Length: 279
Image 1 (cartoon, rainbow, N blue to C red):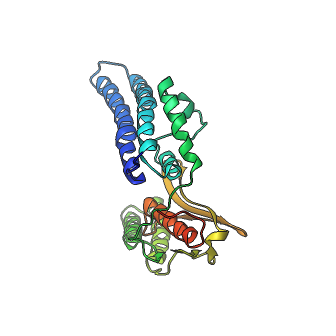
Image 2: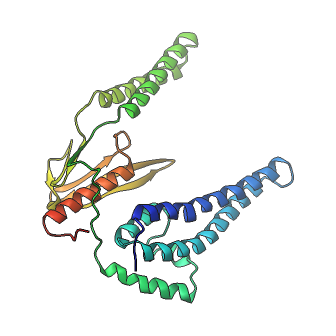
């Protein structure tokens, strides 16, 4: 067996083959329902029907497409542990044993092939270094992100002052307070040039936590959290005396970049200490 497909390539194909079509099918169904409602060809509750129908159609597509992708990906990718973890995080597949995993449509032939591929999980992943990653990476606040937040704070402040002068409404005072608070918080981050996260092949250090060696770190990851309509990406890890949880939304690093840094620096440490098989 020649396993020549990288985890990145498999994830990209999974998004194109499984995730994007499911989303498109949902919005097509919703758009059709909205069109018929707007043109008085159907009652307003058809919007709900369209959303529900789009969800079902998208789910039916996913139950079939996800098996096709899984058979291809786990057959052609060497590091199946990394692939499995990333595929779950990207919404391509469901967690093993979850409700949605139990709804996947599989033929008896599919089950037999997947059972055969399951044996690959008995073999540890091979560490593939990324030579574009430097010996050490210092992650700081993003100047562009904090400047944008600072600009919003200034606009709120100016808008509030304008309202107070022209209408004398109480809402203007609220806008001024919001502008001052947001502007102060964003300026403090904009002016802060100290590294918030430092990573290398020895361990991790953050602005709030002293240096920890990889041998004492566990559970390092970048997780996505939903807070109502907003989404945050948090860098988490645990160590003997506690844990760290950092919102990376204002930092000059993306979720995928940080995930790769964690994989590379952890892998380099394990390779150096004889705890990982190099390729």
